[in-house]
Image 1 (cartoon, rainbow, N blue to C red):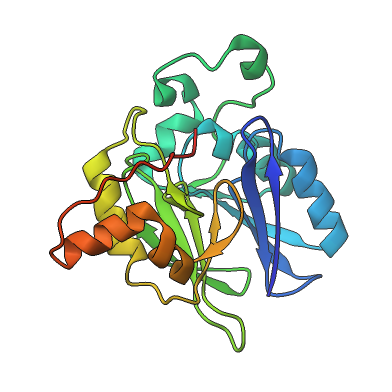
Image 2: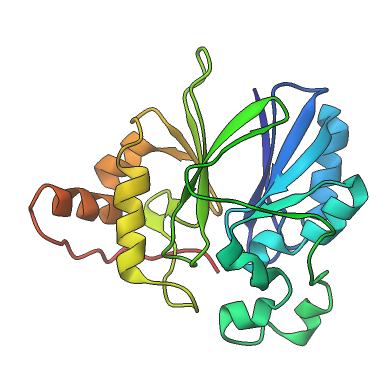
Length: 240
C-alpha cells in the first residue's frame, strides 16, 4: 500500500493520497486550503489516477480544494450529509468571517458529484476498503476512515480532527459538542488495536497504543468506561 501525505495551506492540514501501489488508482483524503498543487505533484510522482475524494468533515481547511481537484479529474466527493453545507458556506460553519483576503483564494462551492457517507459504510475505492465511522464532536458530520490490516501492514486509521498525537479536536465552533466528542473517542477509538497507525488531520502520525497510554483525553474516556470518573484534561486541542 502507498500513502503519500503532506500538510497544506494556512492551517497545515494533512492531505493524503492512498493507493494499492505506485501507478495505480488512488483516493484523496481532505484536499484542503492550497492543497491542489501538492495533490498534482504527488499524482505525478507516484503515477496515480484519482477515483474519489473522501472528506473527514466539512471545515474549510479540509475541503477548500475539493472543487478544483474533483473538477480536474472528474471524480466524486464523499462527505457526511450533516457537514455538506460547509462546502458552500464556510463562514457559517465557523461562526465568524475567515477574512476576505483568504476567502478570495478559495473555490467555495460543491463539485458536480457529491455522495453521502454513512456510519458503518464500507467504501470500496481504488481496490481498497475504507470503513466509515460517524464521529461527531468536532463537527456534527465528522467521520473517520479505517483500513484493515493487510499482510505485514498494520491497520490504518484516518482520524480527521477527532484524534491527534497528544490531543483531540476543538469543540467550540458551531456543531462542536464536548459530550459528543468524548462519546466518539470512546466508541470509535478505544476499540481499535494498539498497533493501528493514526493519520490525523493535523500534526504527526501516531498509534492507538501510544495515544491510549499517553493522550489525556483518551485516558479520560477509558477511565470513565472503567468507572474511575472523569479526569482533568488540560492538554491543548487542535483543528480549525
